[in-house]
Amino acid sequence: MPTPLPVAVPEPAPLPTLPTPAAPSGDGRLLFDVARPDAAGRVTARALLRALGWTPGLTLHVDVVTGAILITPAADGAHEVGAREELPLPAAARHLCGIAPGEPVLLAALPRPNTIAAVLADLHARILGEPS
Image (cartoon, rainbow, N blue to C red; front, side):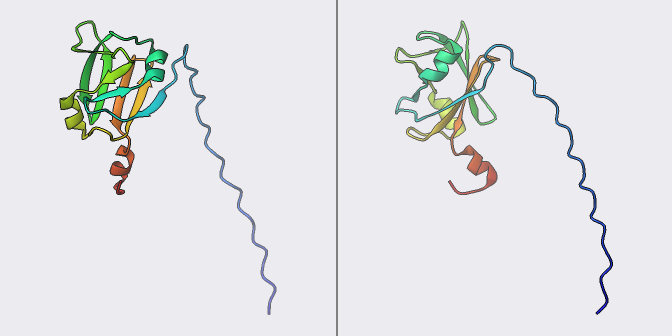
């Protein structure tokens, strides 16, 4: 049996250089929580509200965008932060997003632009087409 010829080992391809992430100014971290709406559509989100500086009685604007409920402070808002630091998820918005009482909802607080987004916690599984 003949001796095999030596094979040159290829040089590994260089890894791409990733850009340096920009440091957030102030405390611009994205914060998450999971809550279950009660029968009236309220969710308790004390940690998120405190991180954003939202206090009971703050008036809010609630809108639905691409299957997510977006909640922002607004002087002319029709809703408000509850006395026990709960957020309202109005019935029409819950219906448009497929959120039922007791179902887990993922809440994301975005310090800039001072918004809380609420989506079904199993949304990622539905997007990927896996059964929930």
